Image (cartoon, rainbow, N blue to C red):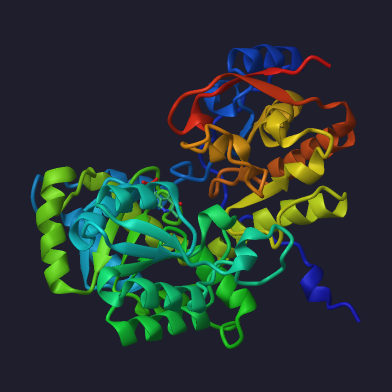
Length: 464
Ligand SMILES: *Cc1c(COP(=O)(O)O)cnc(C)c1O
C-alpha cells in the first residue's frame, strides 16, 4: 500500500517579501551575447541571465531577520558585539572553542596552512578543492588524495562517496611517516565529487587512525550542514536526530575547521577558522591581523558577522535543509524520468549533467560540456558551468589537454533564491536541449589564458 502521507506536497518554508525582477530575453538576443561572451558562461553579464545556476557561493537570499541584523552592525574597530554573537553561535552549533573570523573560506585556509604546514609536509584530503590545495602548496606542502575510488565514478550509487579511504591514508602514513603529516583535511561534503557526503562512521574511523599517529583532523566545514542532512537520510541511527545535533557530532571528530559562510550560512560574504587548541588559536589570532584585519572582525564588517551569526541559526533548521536539498532532488528526479544522464546519487548543492553521455557524438577535444552549457543558455537563458576538459587544463610537461574522466555541466542552486516553478522551467529547458541533441556541434577554442583557463577562455562553433 502506498503511504498517503509520503505523497503530500510540501513547499518552500518561507514567503517572499522582496523581489528582484528577472529579465526575459529572446533567442536572437542570447545568440548575440553568447558570441560576445566567446561561448563561455563565465563571460556573460549577469543582467543577461534568466535563471543563474553558475554557483551557490555568496548567491544566497538573506531573511528579514538577517537584514534587520545588518542594521545592528557594530562597526567598532575592536571588540564589535557582532563578533561575540558570532563566536557564541559557532560554539553553540559547531562546538569549537575558539573563533577567528575571515573575509571568506580561503582566508581561513591561508591561516591554517601557514601555521601548520612546513615545507616537505604532506596533507591528505578527500579530493582536492581548488583554493584549499593552492594554499597547502603555497605553504610548501603536497596534497595527497585519499578519497574512496567510488568518488571518481559518476555511476556508482555509494551513499557516502565522500568517504576517506582508510587504507590509502594508512599507506601514506607508512610511506612518509606521521611526523610529515600535520593534519588531514576532510571536506564535508566533497564539492569536487559533486557534493557527496562523508558518513559519521567514516569520520570516527579517521579520528581513531589519526589519534593513533598523533595527526590532527581539520574539517572543511563549508557544506557540513548538507552533509548532516545526508547522514540523517542515509545513516542508521540518525533518522530521528535534528540536523543541529548531527552537525555538532560531525565537528566533534575534528580539531578545528575552515569555513566559507558563503555556502551553508546563507550570507553573501564571510568565513571563519574555528579551533579547539589554544596554542594554534593564539597563532591564528596573531596572524589574522597581517592578512585579514583585527581578530574581532577578520576582514568583515560588523554587519556581515551579524548576518552570518543569524544565518547560522536559520541554516541548522531541519525544514530549511529539507527544502534546500529537496529542490535539487526534485530537479534530479525530473531529469532522470526523461532519461537525461546525470551524476548519481544527486549531491547536496548541484545537478551535474553527464556531457559525455548527453552528447556522445561530440569528441572530448571539441568540449562537450562547454558546448552543452552554451546550448542551455541559448535555449533558455539559464546559466550553468563547465566542469570537464576546459576546467582540467593542460599538462605542463607535454602541453596536451588533460582528458578528465568526468565531463560535466554543473547546475548549482543558490539557497532560498528560486522557487519550484523555476525548477520546472530548468528541467524543461534541459529536456528541450536533450531532445535536439543530435543537431548540436562542438566548439573550438580560439583564446586560451595561461592560468585557470575556464574562467576566460573563448570559443567559436565548429563549422557544421
Ligand atoms: C567555496 C569553497 C571554499 C573556499 O571558500 P571561499 O569562501 O570561496 O573562499 C573552500 N572549500 C569548499 C569545499 C568550497 O566549496
